[in-house]
Image (tube, rainbow, N blue to C red):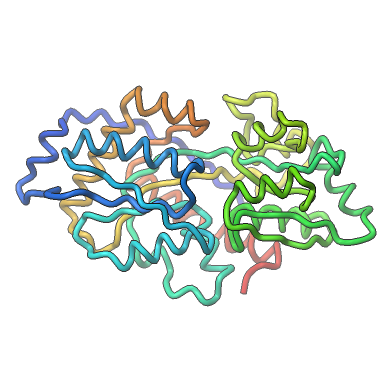
Length: 327
């Protein structure tokens, strides 16, 4: 059994400093625009959250914060792009379990270990995930999906938004944990996975709950279970895997994203950036916009994000091994 990790949402810090105070720092930072690398395609949930954050940071820091999308390879291309940038406090990157943790166990050729190269700035959002099934499967809950897969004469196909991604290992583990074999079809982005589900090119796959709900409303797919320890506040009608009879902590891991910098970035700049992020995340406007985008504002401190990140490394290692994905 894989140990459960409970992510406690950090309280938003009440920081009185103004944007002008950050901009007029003793060392002159920031003196030019800042780049925020998003390791996913434009228009996705992480990208939307990043752009909300970047607008708030621009006001706090008095400099433009440019979002640069670098998708591919389960988010590692974005991390590699950040590693090639100077450690001068002008480049930051969004990280999440797929690119920070999972890939070190599923991509043997990766040239770095994220925990050795990056430090956290702050937790930004929690993304609720859901298991979707094509309408052709006729499954309304996880147990029905499992029973359908077990009775197929050929291996059913499942999709993900990238080899070694969160969506890959959770969907793969569904098969190994329930004694059925399935074929993995990786896509480059979540929207491609959703298209494949809608056209019945794959039988099931994991997405953010917002995208799953929108696709279900078309009648082409069905959300069979929420991958979370409790029901969604925004979509309370979607039952969790546990409620539907599959009580395995692997199906209760929350998705999250946070802001990270290279490890050798000057500490004074890291502290100022953390303060700026906390200030942005504490604002009702930021929180409301993220909720409207179907992401739950997190606002974790650098220390809290670091604890969450490192505590989940052994959990995902065990999960990838259990799903027969570790290299």
